[in-house]
Image 1: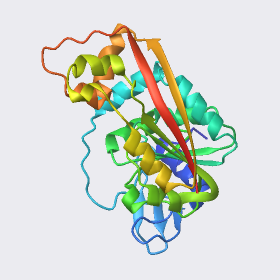
Image 2: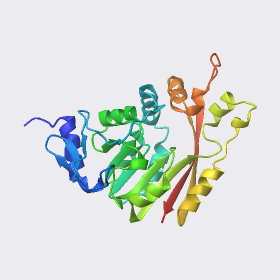
Image 3: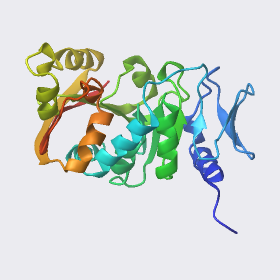
Image 4: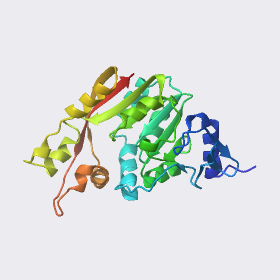
Length: 277
């Protein structure tokens, strides 16, 4: 017998972990039908795409993130720029069985973190279909869903760890989805994040400096037990990666036409927040 198609393999992985899912329309339990659909007890149905992901959106939604942005993001992450961050996150969630990456984009962070964990399943969700398409194309050991956390396709108390890496948060939904001993890992920029780029783009403007104080305070208000670890390092940046960096970061979207940016190194400066209920 030949190898399974990507659709069949994706459906099989979802079936193995079907208890993670709940219908985003009526919240009832789901099953995987042989033809490759997730169907709930009320007969709401979501087809597994030929690329192996499932679209569980309940409403139309647009995304400002393009296919080119996700390609650039993957190139930057594959370069190893975030290796230290991913290693720290893997250490903090070691021993978990279920991981959800919210706002996973093209899935590179989740795939690289899961490669450092044993016996765990990773699930990525993003509202941007282009991101999930790329994730399903490159990483077949995780489950990928187009979906909206406001209408979440997951069951209560399903995930031991929820990742929220440089992405908007939905803390009430995170709490619903966490297992009793689970944790939320949120990554937010610190003042020096991509500072070489910020300095050139926003010189002598109020955007030249950045503070995450409000974001950190809100996280602390949302969880009873919070730890914060700052991760800071500066690494060389290959000249061919500069266009990808400008493409993937919102800072780069505001570059004035004709303005030349030159970088030989870049600083990663991030807070890793870990919250437990």
